[in-house]
Each structure stands twice: as structure tokens, then as C-alpha cells.
Amino acid sequence: MAPWKNRRMPGIALVIGITSLMALAACGGETTVGGGASSEAPASSAAAPAPAESGGAPAADFPTPNGGELNLYNWTDYISPDLIKRFESETGITVNLDTFDSNETLLAKLQAGGANYDVIVPSDYMVAQMIELGLLQEVDPASFPNGKNIKPEFLDVYFDPGRKYTAPYMYGTTGIAYDPTKTGVEVTSWADFFDPNSPAAGKIGTLNDQVEVIHAALRAVGSQPCSPNKEDYVKVEELLKNWKPGVAVINSDGVIGRMASGEQVMHMMWNGAFTRAQADNPDLQYVYPAEGINLWQDNFAVPNGAQNVDNAKIFMNWMMDPKNIGEATNFVGYDNGITGSDQSMTPELASNPAVVIPEEFKALAKPTPGCPVEVIDLYDQVWTNFKK
View 1 (tube, rainbow, N blue to C red):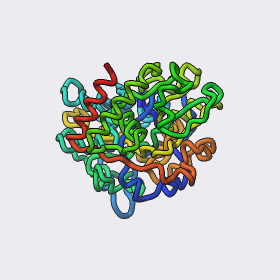
View 2: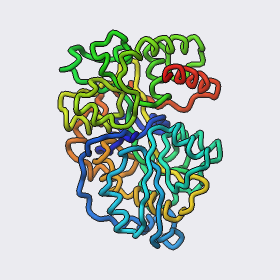
View 3: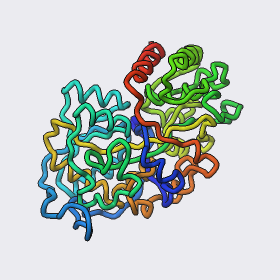
């Protein structure tokens, strides 16, 4: 992400399937150069709302805004600047925003211990890894006043059962964006994307995302993500080696601007980022590759070492207000995990097949939990050789 996401419409959870959403995996935001659609959501008093009749923390037990700062580490271009300004205005809390372009960058920064962040935005598989490594605080977001708004299918997720560590943010898919008026051919699969003889060669871009790229390449060679077979990685390494000369850029930042301007004519892309690029370049199309597509979810979490934990809780709770997360969704172009946010979703997003998965493609979108350690080592080796 130099982040990538945005919110959606009523019934998207049904479109994807409740059981699938309970196990979303691996992605992130998207980076962009153009702005996304913004919504004029009414001001919210969600910083410390009254709790639901059942569930949620009593208002007296939840921190109230008292100024100070919040250090937010988010994917690039993955939250509306106007939304941040409104949060600051309503709470008196000053937000300091820093950005990253991959889950691995986020992990490395935390493990290095050189940063002081209060809220971070890891994807599903990375949440599971960070919990295992002891990097996150158990702040119990499900018990926050607005925790009652979490959609049921987003509560007992595989990476954080019961939402003890994280609050849901955006979710979506990672597919292929291309301009058929420039490529001259139809793209329908990962095999097409990784074709070294593609007419788009020289103007192809891919995300700087080890997990997403190798997941897709494994599918292209006839395997599946997290394959335990070493021979599959030999095939993937050969595929990427032959494909790389036609790749103009390996970068998760600026994807929206590059695709909108035509600098690249085909790119691995998050669906939310795609909707923003398509707004400036209507010729763009989003592909659900025939071999399958990754379904992921991004989340808010509080890392160990956070200095402003109360402000982190206030921010996470504020973002679980349907009006606020709805505005976020309209900016980034991804759907979210909060009930009622569809009421703030723009009609353009609600009718966009890149946002709301069409019936014929539902079965292609599946979550991919984190790979075993020995498989991650294989991913590391392939990625290192690809990036040389």
C-alpha cells in the first residue's frame, strides 16, 4: 500500500462469502499520486461514544480525548488527509503520519526498534506473525465502545480470534490492472501477466511485495501459494528471470499515478488502488486471474513500545464508527469490516466490479494464511534473486 484500499457497499461480505472473510490474508494499501473519491461524511462524535446495550466497554472505562499526539505508521496514501484533519479537530489529538510500502518493511522497522509508533496497519498474515513474535499489545479492540460495529465475519478471524490485538480496516483483492487499448490483447490470467513475450513488455509494473508476487507466480506455473515443493520454486525463479527484462518498475508506491498516466500499461494492483486510477483513465480494466486471486485484510494494531496507548485506542475506536470508516473507504476504494459503513459509500464504488466481486469470479478470491517458516525461506531466496 503505498497503500491501496477503499471502502465499499452493502452486501460485499455476502459477495465474498462469510467463511472466506473469516480467514482473509496478505495485502495492504496502495500508493498513489492522484486523490481518490472523497465523501463529505458528517462530523462524528465517535471518539468516546456511548456503549451498546450489550457488549463494548463502559464509557467510563474508555479513555477520553485529552490532546497529545498519535504516531501513525500506515501504507502510502491509505487514509484520507481530510479524515485525519477531522479526527484532529474532534479529539484535539495531533496525528504524525509516517508511511511504508510493504508488510516486510513494517516488520523490519519494528524489529529494529528505531521507531516509536502508536498505531500500525499490518495485513492479516503479518498480524499473525507479529503476535507470535510478541510485537503487539493486547488492547482488546472488540471491547471498545465501537467494537460492537465489527461485522460478525470479521470478529473471529484466523489471525486474531476475537479481535484481541487488532481492529479491522480495509480488505480487498490483488489482481491485474491493464489498458487493453495499449496492449492490444486480452489479459485473463497470471500466465498472461508473467508472459515474457507480452506486448506490454517494457511498460509492465509489479508491486514491491514478495508475498503477492510469488503467490501469483506459483499460480502461473500451475501450483498454489505456500507450495511445499522445492521444484515449484525452481519453476518460479525461471519464470521471473525470463519476465524481468520486460518489467519497468518494481514499486508499490505511485502505482495509481503510473497507471492513470499510461506510464505503465499493465501492473499487479490492489483493487482499491485500481478504482482510483480508473477514475482518471477509464480504459483501464481489472482482471480476476483464472488461476485465483488473493483476498486480504488490513488492520489497526498497537505495537509494543507505543508511547500514546490511550490515543491509539481513541483513534482505533473512532475509525470503527461507520461514518468515519465509510469516508475512509470512499477515499481508498476498498471495503471495510464495519457494519453500517455502506450507508456512506458512493454509488460509483458500489457498482464497480473491481470493488464488488462479480458472481462469476467469487470462487477465485480466497484468503492465503501465512506460509510455514521453511516455505518463507524459499520465498526469500526467490525474491532475493529476482530483485538482484
